[in-house]
Image 1 (tube, helix red, strand yellow):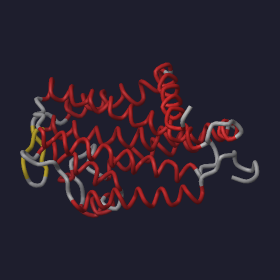
Image 2: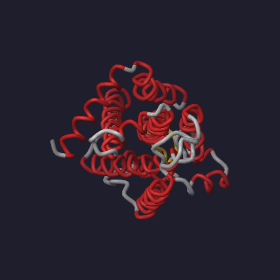
Image 3: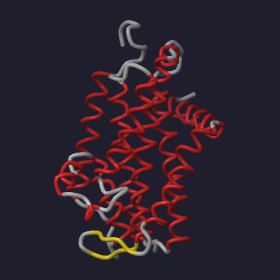
Image 4: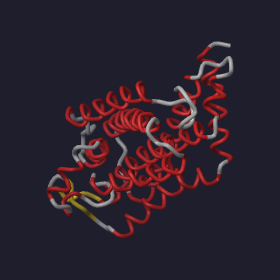
Length: 259
């Protein structure tokens, strides 16, 4: 069996495990949907984006999509990889004839599928309940920013997995980081309500740029939301994450010997 076929098979097993894990389904699929409903119940009508009055339904559909990207690609992946390492599963994978990198590819593949399925669900809810208008421009921006966002936050998860000492630490850091970044990046609270210094801090991190690109695609008629600065920041964080991961990623639990 070729490496590609092995990766596809392992990804399928990873997805099967996901569908059997009720807590994972609730945390990564149902919870974002609840957030979308809650924020639209709180911020009814219109909000502001780039000085324009825009529908809050479309604003929060885009915002919660960016939150899902962070939560699943960073928080969930970080927790799964660190837990597998600390339980000795990664070491066992390295002892099998299957190339060890296939495990990481399968986990990232699972992440990609879960993110895109959840995003599709959120878009459908936005269209049905909040009159989100889907256009070719929006779809182009959506596909590009989801792909870049997943790549960016997966690379960051791999990088941080090398320094997380325990599974409990990884399980706490992921969701906490996603939540804090969401408050800093205009995901949960529109930026016109935030102080300038807080907005400036948010711009340092990739979530602000993923969120802003998606919001532009959803809110600005005839726009894909694609912006050179936003794309550049996401690519830069992706490269930095991969660089750190290539140097610090560990296959054995802390104190177990060499990587």
